Image (cartoon, rainbow, N blue to C red; front, side, top):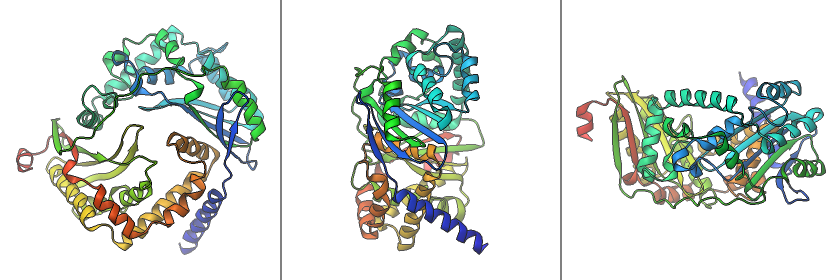
Length: 438
């Protein structure tokens, strides 16, 4: 067993060295398309991740779900390829193309090999410039999407998250919506709406991360070949500003089931804030890590919860420290009460030295695992561009993290954590006595 852990430590150390020495190049094509590139000629793989700054938050109010449907339809036929032929061609050249959407970004990815790169990138080009959007495939996709939505809308976690977002942002703000849209709005979307949507995928909002067996000069040519014909600019509606509620609010949605789920959130700080890594350490100790306070106090010591944890959700206009807990109906209010106590305790007393060192160690170890493959690195290259991080951030992150002291984190925690402003949503059937007691 000791030998096994020694091997794991050695492996992680090698990856840590690799990402510390990572050479990231900014590649700019003749037509001004920019990308971050990490060359890796030790494997035949090439991975590209890219995104446009248009997401579900900019869907028309009466056609929420438009971006989500577009992301599904782009691989349902393009150019001379029907949906079936497109999928078959990708299989023949052992390549993958996929799209996804968040509230703020329309994202795509390509994975291929050096020998098949030319054909794979041509397929990506026609998905973006010549999508078929056939009525037949559109009907199938909409029906499948509606089935998925109908199932999702019944899930307690979806109900809780949707209510939490409405509670924070207000019922009409775009950030309050779900990326998938609703059963009512997707019925109003047409293939022509998808064609109009594609006009907003413009080069001025495009960010790209590439890793693999490809040179900077080769990438320049590919960027011009597949992306230079996209619109140079697009005009999109501005998303209204948001303000996090200044007083705590608890909402209970009754649902007849033996378990309850609770979601809770407070405002966080933007990624570009210089205190961002201090928040990462505090969050790791509070609720994100496998040995976090919430896991220990709520689940392990008392057995109140099936699961409990926190995460940081970054959006362009606001960031959230958001968490969830799942408990029996008889214990959900006890769980949430204990979570609030831990929120106060980390503010008033900070982290212990052991918690601080463990949190740092866990963050560094988890981060290192992002460098085990070209697709993972390409994804990270895109993520940090979306966060508007400097190109040196990935190499410097470990040094920045190690420079942070326990005193600095605890001072940050004292100013940051606001249990009196927590927004809480419970979905389930908590005991009436517990509700009134709170």
